[in-house]
Length: 199
Ligand SMILES: Nc1nc2c(ncn2[C@@H]2O[C@H](COP(=O)(O)OP(=O)(O)OP(=O)(O)O)[C@@H](O)[C@H]2O)c(=O)[nH]1
Image 1 (tube, rainbow, N blue to C red):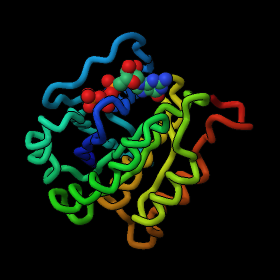
Image 2 (cartoon, rainbow, N blue to C red; image 1 turned 180 degrees about the vertical axis):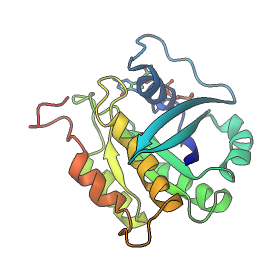
Image 3 (cartoon, rainbow, N blue to C red; image 1 turned 90 degrees about the vertical axis):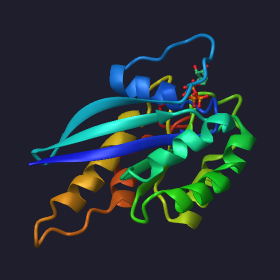
Image 4 (tube, helix red, strand yellow; image 1 turned 120 degrees about the vertical axis):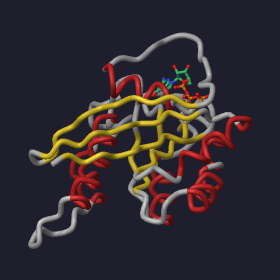
């Protein structure tokens, strides 16, 4: 069997959606000037979860306001949604509530939402504490982790957790317990910016 998952990446312009996808797809970080995504683009990735092929079609959306109506049309077909803010940008964090309102309006009710605090490598510029991200995620009942498109911290995990969750939903065995995405992430994620050696 094969499971197909439509994933969409959203969040303010400049939070690192394109960079995160490039890091996941190609294992690299492109330094240099920031060029905003225009409209929407996608990347296909295949991951194997418990011997089942999961085909991820990942849509990278433009964060700029003027492209919002284009993006809305894609929400409906998404099974998973990665919502990003930038830990060095308070406004991108404050806008998460508005993003979630929009998601609840346009996306399917059972869409898997993952909140990601990106740019965790930028320790000196950080303005949003990890605990603030955790608190917000808890309030909305969504899984959370900090990522870095630059160093790759937690990038693969974010996509893998989504793939695992949707594979379990699509191919659950009768006696198999429900996949606990929160527990899985907690057991796998790398803490960044402190103590653990990951920056
Ligand atoms: N240090 C650091 N810089 C990052 C990271 N992710 C993205 N950036 C930088 O932030 C800028 C914006 O990144 P993009 O990936 O283009 O942001 P975006 O969310 O796709 O922006 P839009 O396409 O306008 O929605 C670029 O200059 C990236 O190099 C990260 O994890 N760490």
